[in-house]
Image (cartoon, rainbow, N blue to C red; front, side):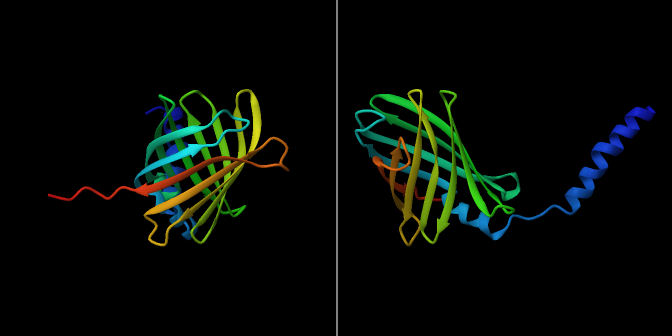
Amino acid sequence: MTRVSALLFLLVFCPATAMHAQAPKPGTELKKLSVFVGRWTYEGESKAGPLGPGGKYTGEMTCQMILGGFFLQCQVSGKADGREARLIEIDGYDPVNKSFSCQSYFDDGSTFPRVLTIAGNTWTYVGKLAAAGKEYQYKDNLIFAPDLASATEKAQVSVDGKTWTPFTESKWTKAKPAAKK
């Protein structure tokens, strides 16, 4: 091993090993995200408004905790008006700012950042949505049933942040795990 290789090894792997031995564990806030772990189905209706004429949609979402339990990753696929869309969402918690962040990546290359607030069974998402070359303010309330196996969701959009228009209404249902043989 050359002197440069040995130095590179020491600089890269030794600190990583030391950090791994002292690796932090996910905080209790992150456990709140685990309610979405598993497979979910959803159905809903987008409302006629600034983003289009509206219509029915359906889909499914599968989520898992990743990177040592510090993030929730969800893969979503849905259908509306004969079109299909896919996205990946990554949610996490920032302990310094004490806030959840959500970032969705769509199969058309667009992104959708949001901040999430969790109060009991009510999850409130706030962010900006880009569609049809315009940016809209977005807010969404997702309310889980007491058993955490279903939820209802209502989202709104605004052009100016003052006047809000209904955007979507959805029902979510957690799929029951397949019976073990």
